[in-house]
Amino acid sequence: MILVSLFAALTVVGTFIRIPMQPVAFTLQTVFVMYSGLLLGGRRALASQAVYIMLGIMGAPVFANGASGPGYILSPSFGYLLGFMLAAYVIGRLGEKVKVLTSLKAGGILFIGTCLIYLAGLPYLYLIVKFVVGKDMGIAGVLAAGLTPFIVPDMIKLAVVAATSSHIMRLMKKTGLLNS
View 1 (cartoon, helix red, strand yellow):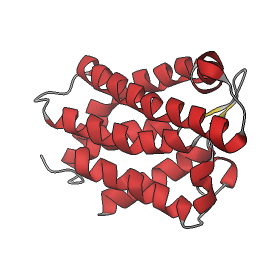
View 2 (tube, rainbow, N blue to C red; view 1 turned 135 degrees about the vertical axis):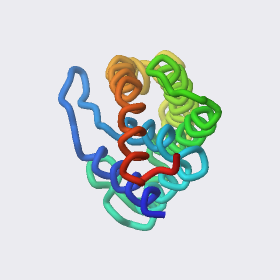
View 3 (tube, one colour; view 1 turned 90 degrees about the vertical axis):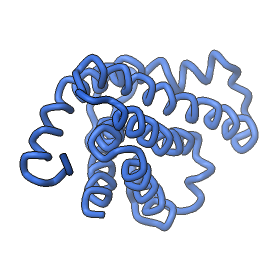
View 4 (spheres, rainbow, N blue to C red; view 1 turned 90 degrees about the horizontal axis):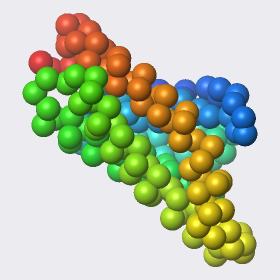
């Protein structure tokens, strides 16, 4: 329970760590989504991201720019948050099946998880913009708004998590935070 809460809190912290890049700044949320999957396993990683989302829906200002409340469900970016849950779970389940987690194996698992975030986020973005906002942005517009600016930073974050996760896992096991 402590680790689930910790990773929910780390995802909140990651929301507010903004790294300025052009054309948009990016946050470190997905770093903690990825770590939660690899370090906690599927069920606990899913729980950590569900706690994060529920905190925001219940009114805690944990989403981007301090947003919160049930109305955030109609935000174009809410689908990515749903993708966080899916990605954390799948990363965790795939990680559980790996005997020895190498950086290369972690990278492959994290790539699948990152794709799942986009798989949830991009259609949700399209649907909210089209049916709630009332604008038709088309596939190219959705990709330009919801994928293109983020793919390179996401691949950098993926590489960092892949390179460090086995070391962090080893330290957490050594200190008794994770079961061996």
